[in-house]
Image (cartoon, rainbow, N blue to C red; front, side, top):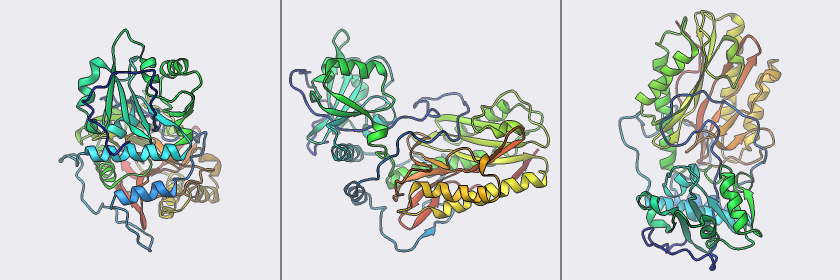
Length: 465
């Protein structure tokens, strides 16, 4: 964005004959993320296949700019794991987080424009979704009406909106950092958008952009080309500032509180769906405005990482995988613990211990400069050495922020080095088909001198009734 961006309230007429320039990126929301409105709890996938494109390392200039703007980044020569409890205590829902300011949003848009230009793009196009919310604080409904943020390095941010949604756009916390252009029903929104773009330009477009909108832009500007943002700017939201980390810590604390309470709930004789509903209720009671997933995989169902809580009645002797999370104050939680109904067998304890050791080893490997794939390799090596390598069937982790799944991904082939401020899950597992599964997951953040856990519930197997 431009340092002298005009106020959002200043209305500009659309001039398709005078092309502008755009610049910005959007990351796709993971299937577990369903938007920013309240939803009933529904199970989701703990880990998904490796991302098809390997992200490029953050540029040195971008990383230095981010550190300069966020004083949380200070050099310390020694690597260590921070204490389980955050340096600044975070309650699970009894206080309001520090609000993001117009300056915060302006900084994000400026950094996005810089990174897009460095990647050889003319600009970035952002439609409603998590990237638009992160960049300018605007969360419009996703509909057939086109809303489009255009970011370029050589012009101020521009936001094209339907005229009937202008009041909501003008009320967004980042409103003063963008200039708004409107279109009316009966007009061609893609001709309006074309007036903000460079004919023949090369733009990054959010992966979640509706085909309707992308095809409309292609028809309006047939010589313009588009690339998926996940392929060209995958790390846009990956490095969090101090306030973002604290929101993630608060969401993690809320999820931890929900886990502690679910241990007192009756498991045996109840359906998985009933326990999942309890988890969803507890997450909301502890401040979550949105529940994205409540996986309850009992007995043989726990061996399916993609299992959705169903009508199976939990039995005495079952291992039960609990994976749950959502959004609190706009930032995600995601944690997994595996519990046992009644006393576990020696084999069940053994498998659980292997996963626990693998998870601990992986977390202790986190520090700046370590490639993402190394975290996966460390966890996988422990499980393979124990003879269960073929039963660890997913990557070790994924990023988290305004969505519960986003870059970086901890997977073989991902050479992106860890950077202070990156927040992600570490969640190895073992899944024995037809018998049971075990997964342990914490959200952690890479710090200047090591790692900080954002979940602090015990890793030992809890016995439930």
